[in-house]
Length: 142
Ligand SMILES: CC(C)(COP(=O)(O)OP(=O)(O)OC[C@H]1O[C@@H](n2cnc3c(N)ncnc32)[C@H](O)[C@@H]1OP(=O)(O)O)[C@@H](O)C(=O)NCCC(=O)NCCS
Image 1 (cartoon, protein in one colour):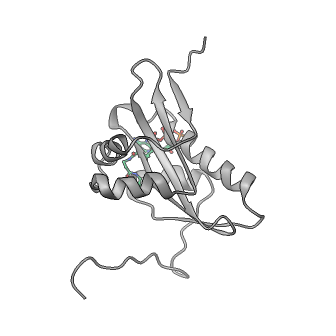
Image 2 (cartoon, rainbow, N blue to C red):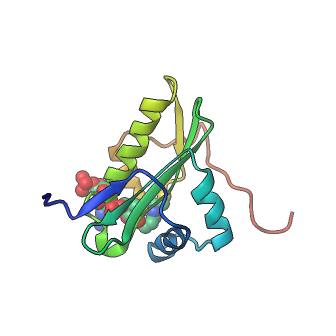
């Protein structure tokens, strides 16, 4: 028996669970159609389940070419499970995957929303600006 109430599962959560984890942790909501692609097509994906309830309570994934370019996304922990080391556990697993499966000298990026910044900094991420500024395509008509 273990005292750890959580277990890390080295696979994506279900589509419905992905949608709920994003929405309930305050990330922008995604449709089931969008979630289906995210769950099917990531380079690495893990989630954390609560042993007793079986519920998916945290997740994170990496998009990547497998060679050198990797992007961490969907870092999310349900509010009632935050601050218990789950985000750190998820990110550690994702970075270990890159260490183990990718050639040396990977380029690892992420877009750091405010709640994640202390975690990312503490795990070795640094701001890329002003040399390199994160940009996204605006959703408005172009
Ligand atoms: C970012 C997020 C995934 C972190 O998940 P978590 O499971 O709470 O993370 P952890 O418990 O592993 O905490 C990791 C670190 O984050 C920081 N942290 C966590 N909770 C914090 C809080 N309330 N205030 C300040 N820092 C905090 C600490 O540096 C902590 O390090 P420690 O282990 O030395 O204390 C979670 O806050 C979340 O889902 N936020 C909403 C969604 C979001 O914004 N995701 C990030 C998108 S870029």
